[in-house]
Image (tube, rainbow, N blue to C red):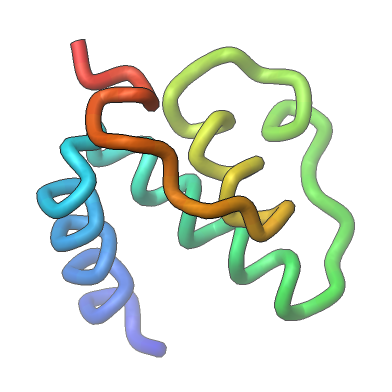
Amino acid sequence: MSVIAFKEKAHVLAEEQGWPLSSAKGYFDGETFRKRHKEPPLHALVGIDDYSEGFRAGYFHLPPPPPGYLGGH
């Protein structure tokens, strides 16, 4: 997937779910790590920021949280 397509998917997901863009980017990064059977970075597993929460949702194949759950201040 090209970088442009990735950015567009992240924007669409953020808009659909009502997430901050950083949460959507984290979600797609988490999915990518899971699909490639890569170990996740420590900061994504223990971080409390929007990106890390999104990453864990994507990595652990969790259903997307309701709109506004991930950050969305």
